[in-house]
Amino acid sequence: MKTKKGVRKIVLIIIAGVVVVAALVFVGIMLYGQHQMSKIPAMSFEECLNYTTAGNDRAVITVGVIKDGKAEWTVYGKDGAELPKTLHTYEIGSLTKTVTASMVMKLVDEGKMSLDAPISDYLELPERAHYPTIRQLLTHTSGYSSYYFEGAMIGNFFGGKNSFYGIGDSAIYNTLKNTEISPEHHKFDYSNFGYAALGLILEKVTGTEFTRLCDDYLHDELGLANSRISDGNGDLGKLWDWQPGDTYMSAGAILSDIEDMLKYAQAQLDGFSENHESFAVIDTVNENHRKMGINMDEIGAAWLIDRENGFVWHNGGTGNYNSYLGFCEKTRTTVVVLSNFAPSYKIPATVLGLKKLQSLQ
Image (tube, rainbow, N blue to C red; front, side, top):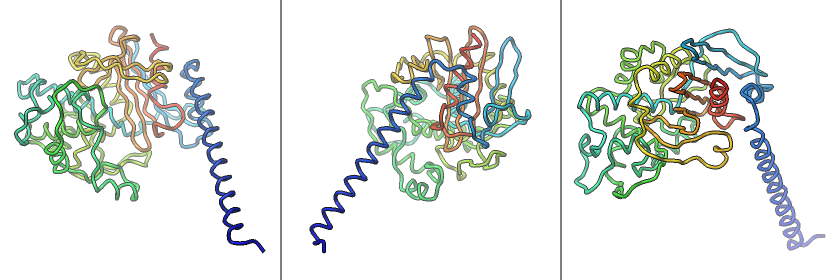
């Protein structure tokens, strides 16, 4: 009969074995992932698309192009096969930030806001020596973090909801009031919180709740009839939950389709050049991104500027969707990719879109 000491030794050996096997599996997956990633730079758009949709019946990726003044789009499904030309509704995620930034720039043009004014000029905040400026919020150089933890995030995680669900104005105000930002130059640090604060400022300056303000801007100013702040309705399902008044909506809550996104892209080429002017030098991509040709050299009003390729672009991602819109002002070409996969699934829309845009130059 084995002693308790002997049994414990066996258990420890088994646990150690499991840990070692798990570690080897993890390392194997990581190395395999790195090997697969190393292939991407040499792959064409078609190869990337086919790989991403391979064997997946759920795939619905819509790709739109503007070239020589003509807009065209195609819907792709499993194994890269073309699907019927149906308009699908997608979450565009952080591409929403470009719309929020555009509304800010409109108010700047109207003299109702100033790019270099501190946010305390527009919000009731404690007396303090320094607050970030509107320009710094637009360019993610304010010093604010991507987001700040709120108790609601715990329930959202266990309830399978969007992390920012139920986080309203008071939470943003409290963080702004209790977070001191130093006055020195801050490096680019992508901040959803910063764009939530911009949404709050837009509400204060206009006296209009953000959802209505944004929907009116999309429909009346941009002519995007099918785009809107998420109402939970979309034919591809699995949309993020939002609650009326959620302040992070201004960072990533717009729903749209390919025709509207191509109209939006054309509008960028035709009349929004000031939004693409460089506000800050950021040069922030890592080596893996650079190998795939993704460059973030400078930033304008939300839009990222790739000086090497001459592209202006932004992307977006939610729990089950990811998107890309990029254009070249010199050649007046545009690519939009809307995908019903999470950004982490195989090859994201950003890489697909960049590959396609490069092929059109």
